[in-house]
Image (cartoon, rainbow, N blue to C red):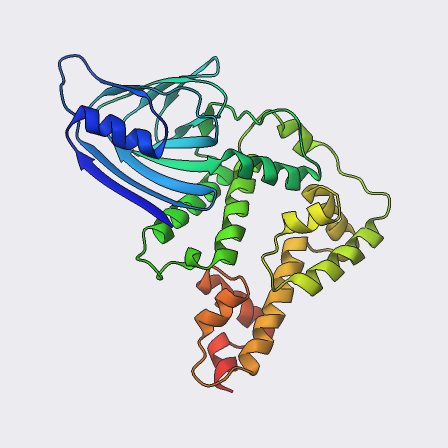
Length: 320
């Protein structure tokens, strides 16, 4: 887990430190201002990260094409004018600005506009889109520059970013994301949710009707794959990729054949495995360890789902 924390009033150092986290760029304070009040905390794990960034003063930022990553920039106050890829957006707490890797940008941050910035590696985005579609795409993924943050899907995604930021700020060996399987699953889910929540150059492909010639056969193969590998770093996207179908096709076939979703089926397999582990656990075992071992990040949700399925709490099972 990578972490960088910087505080400085010096413009040149601010430019250099932010450049190390993102890329070299031009940084110009507003006319008559000769210093900034930079406060930056950057955390990253795998292909995603969160950067909390505040210049304190009104500044103009001009980065070249980012090349290897995407950014979703969400002001918690103030406003930012962003020109990127031929579009101009005024970003506020209700409208995030989104930068794709392929074009330069010109941004003017107002005074008092701290930002929370979500970072996503370009290759991770490409991989997750391929999982969602069931096949890779040749054209670059370009996200719309303005992202409305007031919709239910955007709010759900923002809660995921907040959870990521909180876990990445924990001390060493104290974060859920220190477990590589948990971190990988969360990364895929967060990027996938962004691709479904926000419009981009391949959104029309995700919206196309899904069909499969043999839905029953596909579901049986998927169930067998999940049952055999649910203890590994496995997501629904991985299952769809292995079976060479889109996530949407897999979801539709599960609903048609089993009246459930592949996510629910995978979760049920993991709950059953956790139940077996708790029943046979040695003295000194903990519910938290078992939950993480079987891929459950949200411990409260795990306890609720476990009780719903087995009629008792995980702790009760463990004490038997």
